[in-house]
Length: 330
Image (tube, rainbow, N blue to C red; front, top):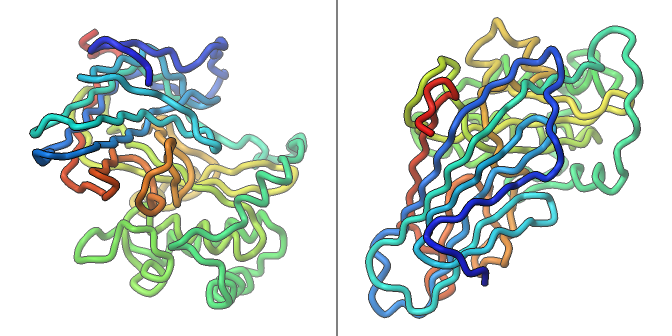
């Protein structure tokens, strides 16, 4: 276990980050607090895991600052997700709070090879592509899903992988309503989404990813938080997720079907682009944490997770805020 003071700074990247010319960028300060409430007296062991944003070609993370009342570790999982872990023997009853603060520069992620006469992309690693053809627990690739996916491609007259990917995207944007009423939405259950034709971003992208994989097109999931498009500061109420599909000679194509459904004028934009108004926290679904949790794999990992004496503990919340760079208080 790493020894720390109550505050610590961690730099998550070691190579210079150069912003590409053309795409829009956004700089902001971001804070994420996790609060474990009502820890029972007599608890033998408490485990807490938090997702930690990572640097990649489309987001630069710097000045990560962690306030924690106890030692912690930050480790990297096999898929690149960064995970903050705290393990405590005989924790005090009551509340445990952990706070992450960081600076971020997010760059608009556009796939330039969707333009005319692109230079072919180098082939992706075959093991990586194979991983993103496998089913998830709530996104099975079974006979029914294959039938529905083939019907979408056939009705659109789609033959190439790019045509099929666009047909799936158009189908989802046109036939699924962004609607967070009632029960069942938000789990990314492909059967719920296909039958109810409504839900949030998780449900939209369950269909996109499931149908793509059913047609042999690798597809992957990412989740984080939306940053309101209007510059300023404030609280962020909930997460946002998105997808990418892989087409040979083009590469990974960013997709945001739920944003396109909410803003039909940007349907073409969101097939091939993730805007800069977001911060990615983790990739993939059916998440196995580091160290491994006792409970089932997490459906996705954007909120903190805790276990008490080897059992999932639900009384844990999070609070998320941001300040754009010109308004940041640092």
